[in-house]
Image (tube, rainbow, N blue to C red; front, top):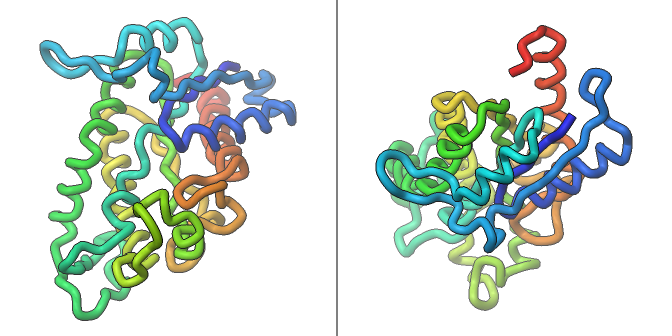
Length: 256
């Protein structure tokens, strides 16, 4: 059973995790899995989206790849670091917000409290290309698609260990946002993914609870080799969740 993965930088951990599952002989029903992964920053398929009349469409070269692979289902890891870009450092006037899905979380002191709706709409603007890509990929194929939630933010220790991922030089600790604030921003982004997936008939796969450590950062078990990505352990768990859903659908005779 062929799996096709499409995505940006987070797709690397997904691909490595999937290859490990293949090596272990993982199956869906009675069929062993195979896979192919496409990095959407590959110059040969850039730009991903092309304009024209109506909604954007995916690059014809990418559309050809998707059709040629004849996969049973697709894994999408499109975008995913917008929450990091928006939250890693606080602006000149620090702010915080009440997270609607968990309003009991504490608020920072001596900062401006803004509405979550404003944060969400700013995030939506940052994710415009990501959300448009999800929609275009859905229109480009009829196979079941699974959107994989990006990993939660990494803790301060990882940010400080790899400062040049986010800053030109050493991190100014006074500007570095709190881990809890970064968690809230991740949840806002995940909410936008969920809404888009529900609209586009794409199944959203959330991060397993075991990978989220207090106060909302990526658990050490899943740390990748830098300050913003996860590792193949994380990738394999996400692929396995999608496989379980596909297996249940096939057992129920749904197929899709």
